[in-house]
Image (cartoon, rainbow, N blue to C red; front, side):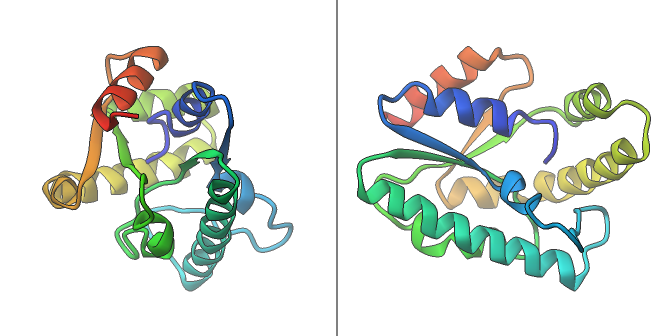
Length: 171
């Protein structure tokens, strides 16, 4: 979901290792020059296609960097359509940890408003946040059963969140 700290935490986590790379999927998606599809309450075929493509590229990229000794952090959002199936090979690779950053919905909405202000982009992402939280509330038990580490960073600093991830994954 937007506003939970994926990019901030992903970069900070990567920074704790001597050889690492942080791959924010949204940055790759924004390379689309014409026809970019953004998430919202309703998803069209164009958005699904762009997510599948970006995630496939990121998965291959992450595996390639791992082959030469990099620790890789990927930041992306969970969607209820693919459940990140595009990362199949990466998610099943040894020493891969699935981490879901989770804040209160109110915190995510407040961060989003702080980032974009009361503009159209805020409204679009606020809709995506509400939709994501509707899905996540019902999916948390399923994700935990699939060995996702769920980290509630609502009241944590960046450093506290990174420390919790490192401690709970044993990295």
